[in-house]
Image 1 (cartoon, one colour):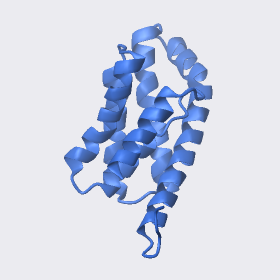
Image 2 (cartoon, rainbow, N blue to C red):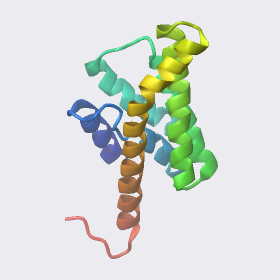
Image 3 (cartoon, rainbow, N blue to C red):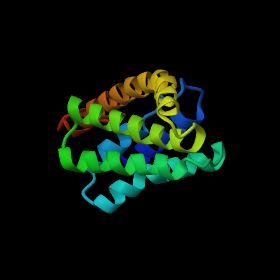
Length: 154
C-alpha cells in the first residue's frame, strides 16, 4: 500500500494536471488514520513532496507547504477515519495557512494585500477541494476493495 501511495503521489505531481489538483492532502489524511506508526504517517507525505520537489524545484514557501501537510496528517490522526468533515477541514486549513504564507512573503502587509491574495487564490482552492474529494474517495474505495476477504489482485 505504501508503494502504491508513493507512486500515486509522484506520478500525479509530475504528470500534467490542473493546478493544486493533487492527492497529497488525501495521502496526508490517509496516512494519519491508517498508518499505525504516527511518525511514519507524518513523514510519508513529506517524503512524497520532497522526492517530487527535487525534480520540480525548491521554493521559499516549502516549509509552510510542508507544514500544511503535517497539519493534515494530524487531522487524519485525530479524526481516525475519512469523513467529509475531515476532508473539508484539511482543504480549508491548507488554503488558509498556505495563503497566509503567500501573503506574508509576496503581498503588501496590508488588509488590501491580504484580501487580494486570498481572492486570487480562490480558483486554486476550488481545484484543491475537488482534488481532495476525488483522491480521498479513490483511496477510501481502494482500501475497502483491498480489505474484502474474497478480493483477488490479478
